[in-house]
Image (tube, rainbow, N blue to C red; front, side, top):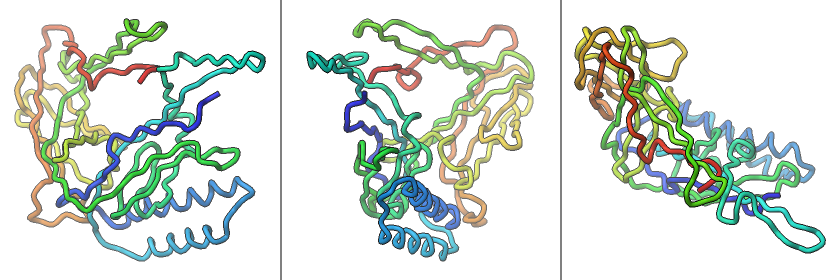
Length: 316
């Protein structure tokens, strides 16, 4: 069985307003409305329901639907949920932990449907992403599907400080491989390392653009985790004889395609406001160039894994 409380890992528990980034109000309020509706549906499964709470949620949804303009965007963060499992002998009372007392297992996929924000006006939860909406503080909770009791919680604040986007980290990813190695420090543990290839080695080979938004407080957010309705991304080639942009309808992942041999910072990437909030003379929120390496003479080059590319399974 799992030990209670569960542990919630939220890399950034202090979400700030992002300077100059505005999003359509209909999108922003939609998250809060859905969060409130989800909590009402969740409580329908339990016998103990509060009429007062239901009325409060309904009023919140009505208030959310009234506004129709652009508003400031706040930072977001991710959630991971961990549990320590143990078995107890009913006769001797002896306890054994799985895998060890120092190991916690990632149970995010098993529990993410039970996540909620206590006050969705402050923060909403979508899948395993929390999004700030207005200044305040609230709790992110995991509820028991049987009793409705809180199995684990963590406080999150939305603050009035403004953070700026200081950089876009952009790289072309053409392939991925996996290396499994035993962990020297823990018995029966393994370390999984992902190794990314950034070289395009055949003509018309596609590569994905891996883009990370860097903020002035040192936090980062992968662009793939941000709702596409909250921004507009432009990708321009600086040498169409080497690399071309290859948009795919319905895909959230920006792609490029190798055309000819060459290398250098040949892609210009700009993060801009969504169309509904963009004015003619608005500057991009951030811009960056991406290094491209196209070589048809050799095999794909696998980069050495760094800390961001490692995954320790079954261990924290």
